[in-house]
Amino acid sequence: KDRCKSSLDSFLYFFVEREVMKTLVNSATTKDITVLCGNRVSGKSYCLASLANKIKDRTVYYFDSSFQIGHKNVNYLLERNGSVIIFDTNVLDIGEFKYIIDNRRKLHENEIHIVIALNRSDRDNIAIIENQDFAEIINLSSKLSFVEFNKINEKIAKIPLTPLSTQE
Image (cartoon, rainbow, N blue to C red):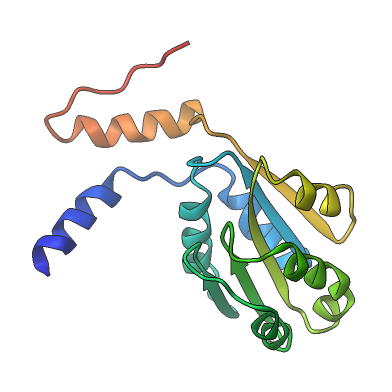
C-alpha cells in the first residue's frame, strides 16, 4: 500500500495546474452549465478532479468516467440544492444530457451548477449547448502552454531527468 502511494505521489508530482482552471472554477460556480471540451487525453479528467478539490463553499458531487449514472440518479442529483455536480466524459448518455439542459431553470432556481466534460469529437452534445447564455464552453488544449511547459521543466530540474524541449 505504501509503495502504491509513493508511486502515485511520484506520478502526481509531474502534474501542473492547467491555465484554464481559474476560468473553470469561476464558470462552475456562476454558470448553470459548464462544458469542459477537449481532445481525448488532453487532461479533462485531471482538471475535473482538481476542480472538485478546489470548491470548498458547497457540496460537490464528482463522477469520473467509470460511472454510468442513469436517469433516476440524474433526477436525484438535480434536487441537491446549492451543489456543484461534475460529470466526466461518457458518464451521461444523450438522454441524460438533454434532460439536464431541459431542466436548466430548476438548476438556476436551486443554485445547482453542472460541469460536464466532453470530447471534442462529441459534436452532437456540443451543438446542443453552443451559444446558450446559461452555459459556457471552456476549451482545453491538448498542448501545454509555455507557462505550463515551464512549470513541468522546473519540476524535472529538481530530479535527475533531462528537461523537455519544444517540438514546433
